[in-house]
Every structure is written in C-alpha cells, then in structure tokens.
Image (cartoon, rainbow, N blue to C red; front, side):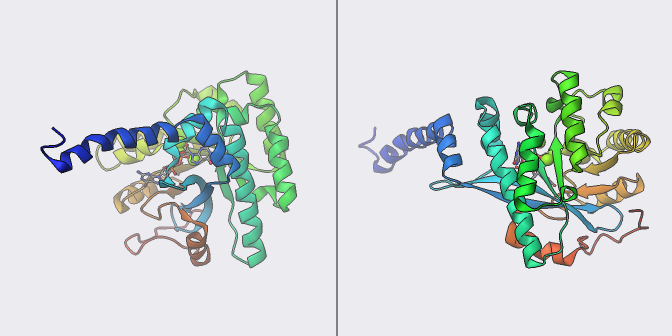
Amino acid sequence: VAKANGKASYQFFRPQLSQNLVIKLNNEQSLREAIDGNEFVLYYQPRVDAASGELRSLEALVRWIHPVRGLIQPDEFIPLAEKTGLIVKLGELVIEKACAQLALWKQQGVPLVPVSVNVSSPQFNQGNFDAIFESHLIEHGIDPSFVEIELTESCMMGEDQAIFSQLAALKSLGVKLLLDDFGTGYSSLSQLQRLDLDILKVDRAFTAKLGESKEGEVFFMAIISMAHVLNMRVVAEGVETVEQLHILQALSCNEIQGYYISRPVPANEIERLMHKRFLFPNDAIPTEING
Ligand code: C2E
Ligand code: MG
Ligand code: MG
Ligand code: MG
C-alpha cells in the first residue's frame, strides 16, 4: 500500500510519531525536567471594575514554553502536575515569578495593581503553605495587599480545622482570598459563610448563559445577592460580549474578566494596559461608578 502511493506511506507513519511525542510530553519525567529547566512563564489577564472598566487586578496564568512544541496551555499539564504532586513545586515557581514580576514593575515605576495566583489543593493543603507564601513576599519586598490567592472548592474538601487555620493564616498576612470557578463544585451556603473569603469568581459556564436564557441571569442574581449579604465581591469570569457586560452591570456584579477586555498576555503586553488603566473597549458605555 505504501509503495503504490508515496505520500500515503509518509502519512501512514506520522500519526504514530506524533503520538509518541504526546506520550513523552505527558509523562511525569518531562514535566519534572521542565520545572527544573525553568520552561514556564506567566501570562496576565486583567480583571476590571464592572461599572467603570478600571483595572483592579491581574490574574497570573502559567504557560509552558516547550522547546519543541512551543506554547502549551495549562489544561494540558496542570492536571498531571496535580496528580503527580509536581504542582507543589510548579506552584511555588509561579508564586516566585509573580513576586519577581511585581518587584520589577515597582522598580520600573509601572502603576501596580494586585496580582492573583492560582493555588491547587495539594499546595494549599501541604500544611505550611502560608509560610512558604510569606517567604516569597518577604524575599521580594512585596506588600501582601498586592497579592491575591485563587482557591477552588476542591481546596476546601479536607479537614475543617486544617482549612480554617490555613485560611486564617493567609488572611492575617493581608492577602485577599478568592474562590475560583464558583458554581462548579459543592460549596453550601453555610460553608461559604464560615470560610470568610473576599471574592467569589463565578465560573465562565454561567457567564456563557447570559443573554441566551433567563436562567443565566437568575443564577447570577441569586449568587450576587447572596455574596453581597456575606460581604463578598463577585467577579464574572469569561465575559466575551458587551451584552454580557451590560447584563452583569444591571445585576450589580462587581468586577469582570474575559476576552471582551483582554486575553491573557505576556508581561510586556500587560504593562501597556496597566498604564492605560481604564480598559473598556469603545462599545461599552460606562454606567454609574459603584466601586
Ligand atoms: P482559571 O483559574 O479559572 O483561569 C481562567 C481561565 O479561563 C484561563 O485559562 C483564561 O485564559 C480563560 N479565560 C479567561 N477569559 C475567558 C473568556 O472570555 N473566554 C474563554 N473561553 N476563556 C477565558 P487558562 O489560562 O488556559 O488556564 C486554565 C486553568 O488552568 C485555570 O483556570 C487554572 O485552573 C489553571 N491554572 C492556570 N495557571 C495556573 C497556576 O499557576 N497554578 C495552578 N494551580 N493552576 C493554574
Ligand atoms: Mg483562576
Ligand atoms: Mg476560574
Ligand atoms: Mg480553573
């Protein structure tokens, strides 16, 4: 078959080659080597005030710059890192890079906003996460009010006492705590009340429903009123259209994040937005300022 068609013989072997590459890429050893080899960089995505478009924070999102494959998105390696425990080391690398970047921006006179870092459950639950975190802040001279921590509901699944003491330790440092991907897990109202977090980030699956059906709006309305009663601010993730923004403004959602404002971009590109400060595109006419 291969001989009858020269091209076909080539195509016959290609899928196997690329599959080998994928297997190699997805193994624990290559991830470990990438961590030791410092093959990761942080991209940053702005989070803005929903009423004014003013920049409030930057989410640090890790990317793997693979020497052969180039840019690899976190969904392709974070799950493996979590499964193998490598996330503890990788996560510390992320904290280190975020602190170093903040220190550099400060030195360069770039107008600073807080940077939020994502923290996985194995990191959060290692027992001394607060001390590790604090040591990086101190090393780079970072004011704790310039860092935020994004936790997921899976971080809150362990033993109550351990979780509460870890949360309290982080809060006493002065860092803000966010609950990420809200709505996808199992948090109960009473749990939320006890956790005393600062910000709820509603998963983008719910934002995607806005404008499509009343159901999405009703969900946000309930979450926002509950969060405000509990003294939490609400961020909508994954805002992609001006229609979604306008619905969220009408519902008094506090902040938004999403491609409508900006995709995650490298540090040098985000600096331009930090200087610009107000980030609504022209089609978003700001309503009243309720910061
Ligand atoms: P996440 O923390 O919920 O981050 C938001 C994700 O949604 C990002 O994907 C971001 O690029 C994407 N996104 C933002 N706006 C939009 C939008 O308007 N539309 C759509 N379709 N997507 C949007 P990304 O950067 O690929 O990260 C995926 C996930 O990987 C993150 O979800 C987070 O769970 C994890 N992750 C990323 N960086 C880190 C890290 O440093 N540490 C840990 N533990 N996890 C990380
Ligand atoms: Mg996040
Ligand atoms: Mg999220
Ligand atoms: Mg996530």
